[in-house]
Amino acid sequence: MTLNVAGLSKEIGGRQIIQDITFEWAPGEILGLVGRNGVGKTTLFRSMMNHYVPEAGQVTVDGQNVQQVPSRQQQLFFIDTQYNFLNNYRLWELPDFFMAVYPRFDEQRFTSLLAEFKLDRNSQYRRLSKGMRALVNLVLALTSNATYIILDEPFDGLDVIIRENIASMVIDEVADQQKGFLISSHDLNELDGLSDRVLLLKDSKLVHDYNLEDIRAKAKKIQLVLNDRVIPAVLKEHSQLIRVSGRVLVVVITNYTPEVDQALKDLKPVLFEELPLTLEDLFRANLAHETGYQMMK
Image 1 (cartoon, one colour):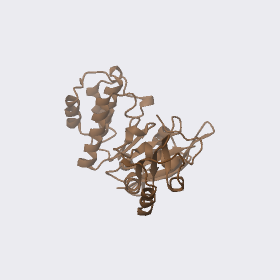
Image 2 (cartoon, helix red, strand yellow):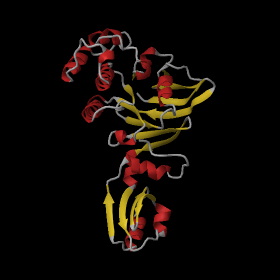
Image 3 (spheres, helix red, strand yellow):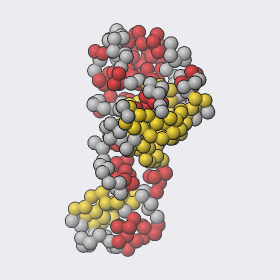
Image 4 (tube, one colour):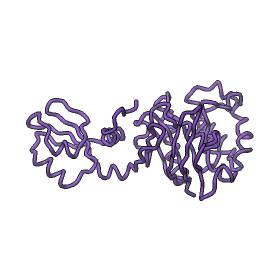
């Protein structure tokens, strides 16, 4: 039941917000979507869900257009937190609303998860803290029984415990139910260790689609202490400098071959140490050539 986004484009007020966005998304796959604030992440989600009518392109599930086949639209779940229609509802009222849209909504599991997270079913949604609203949104997503779940900045402004709870629930749902998740963030650290692939939006376009397992299989982060301050040719040719402090260099090599390994050892460095490789390191290395790009914090 693969979901395909093909050539999706949307203009707002004469400005191109997203342009020719194309990617595939399989059940059981966690996709990260990154880009600066205002780059079009939420517009992409709204266009995928038909909250916006795109100028071009389509979203299909198993080849069927979600705009034309309601049963396919029900395979996607997204709560637009910027225009949240849930504010006036109490939590116990939410299942009736969502069952009208998602016929397979699991009310029993919804009630069970509220109790698990000590969420008072009589609470009004608008009066919950930001972290509690994020948890309720995820509970609704999981109990909708949609196959593809879109989460827009779900970790933004949350404390560490709630962030860990959300990440753990996502991982469990993928393992147990083969749900697919598309999670947006402007902070790469939030997606590290969670995503299978990361999509990068820039200047209204999808400019990169990274398979993190493939990249990590080929890449290494190395710390070197050289005998002098001259940067050797092998590093200039094959690596991206992450940090330089005197004779101490930290580099990422995205295609770490036996030949590169031997060339580094031939330098006879004072120190040669492999360091843990983060998602931010990979993006620094892969996007260093793109002017105007800064790591997102």
